[in-house]
Length: 250
Ligand SMILES: [Mg+2]
Image 1 (cartoon, rainbow, N blue to C red):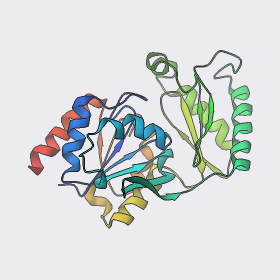
Image 2: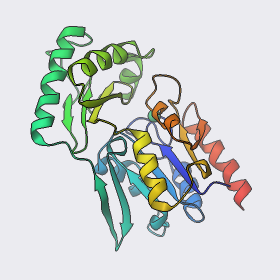
Image 3: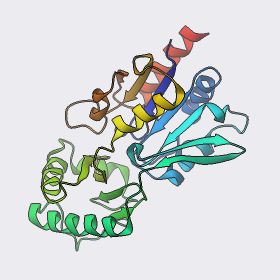
Image 4: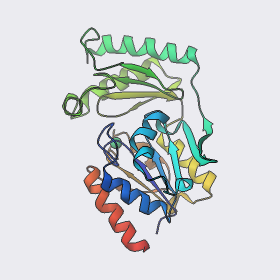
């Protein structure tokens, strides 16, 4: 039995930027009855509300739910009918500007995308604890996003180019088309550690569920912690995993 279950969001609990399915919402609601559950992802808090919180019934045990937006750069807990910020490793506006400039130079250098091509929404977004570059824009259709860099090559190229220009920051692969930049040392491992510490849970008693635990994937950082890991291929595999966890706890 796990003392804490931590889920990646996109590709794990839901399709990229999509809300939880009814079935997933029901399973998460059942988990929350007995176990602290955390969700960690590159999005900002409003994205978590839209994809996860809004899909759960109002009677769900939100006091057992922990939200870690911007790849763990921030933590929110539910108290007094509100999501309260516990910490945020915020980037200043000046840092965000510096990162944006470096992204533009790295794009030109690598040629992974033509900046003058039409995008689906903003390509560069400042999310407080993180600046995110989305190659096709924030609202690009899922099928196009999945097809853009299926072998990770473009993101790795861009990540390397950007890391060279921003040695004082953390440059990570985000979703299917995105690169996340946070303060140095801030990644999913940081968020996982902070949460375990806060809840007084030994890392080895927690489990992390993600669809990109392989080398270079955006869940790989959690191997720096001692949490157990479960790799899933997609949300339907997560569904089966939660069902098996629920079967052992009831
Ligand atoms: Mg994922």
